[in-house]
Length: 285
Image (cartoon, rainbow, N blue to C red; front, side, top):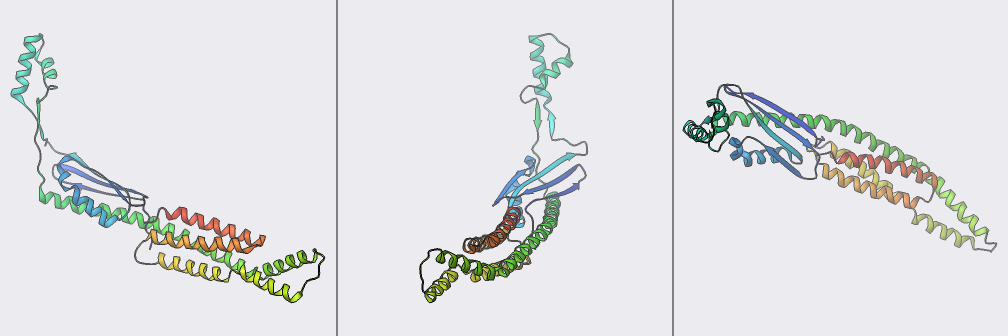
């Protein structure tokens, strides 16, 4: 099966005092590039989260976010009343004003507000961790759906290359005939006598030099191997990339050996199909 590297996953958890939303976004990347955003209270769990994501998502440019929305009268920030009163008294000595205006000024000064650092509730974190797994599963479901689309496209283009290769094989006899006629015409134009046996020997040598039988066999093997690899249990974009490189090598060799315009036109079409495969290969996990 094939997984795409692009996808989106989301999970929402409603707790008694807050709503927690977990989001995962993934784009293509050669390696794992993970960016994590979360409230400071959960920072101590970041390494564990990164390991979880690395083990399950493998590759891609991953954006992981935890959003917390308070849903009850619960706040970790409190007014430092003694400090605020001192600021107000000091301000009254500097400039006259009513208490409301002085209060607005005082709460802007340092230490006017105290933020109490929250500690992670381990039971709560276990619940959050389950939702992270749910978001990862959702992301992988999206990746699989997109992977199915990619797989269908790859199979169609591999089949196109196979059909074009069959056309190349079908015109190989015409190519040999055309090469023979071209060489014979060139020799006759020299207006010189020549040894027909020697000419035939040289012709056989020339045709063997440009024989593409091995390239056709190897290319067919690469096409079959590509399809087999797509059907494996694991998605391996790098392996498919290596196979496509080998396919390109054989197609290029066929093109350089063909020496026959109609065959070269088919080779160009094969290259075009292969380039489209390589472009989409960048998205495969």
